[in-house]
Amino acid sequence: MGQGLFFFKQRPYTESVTFPIRVGTNIVDSRCKIVKIKNDHNMKRRYQIEGMTCDGCRGHVEEALFNVAGVADVAVDLKNAEATVESQFEVPLEKLQKALENKGGQYKIQAMNKAN
Image (cartoon, rainbow, N blue to C red; front, top):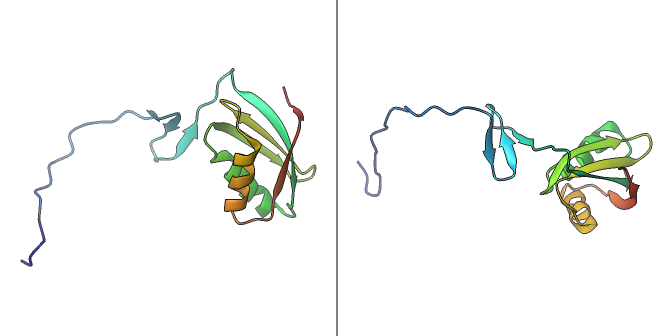
């Protein structure tokens, strides 16, 4: 056995976990996929999205916005170049734009009137 290598006896897994479980402000399902929390108190905002040309772009925008902290749901309309973002609290426009920039696309987001 080489130096620095340690072997631990593995204990049998005896604790059971009931899914879904809460992790921070999110819910995790049995496949370890994060499912956002939705409730009646969420806010909806509409945004104009520039730079989408195909359904792949729509998917990138949707994924980027959905992964912003506080966002509970996103619906992106490619035809009208709009996104409706449902959030648990007010999410600054700058955070949404930064998420789109980090996704690697040339997408621009602008606030529209409130959806609700």
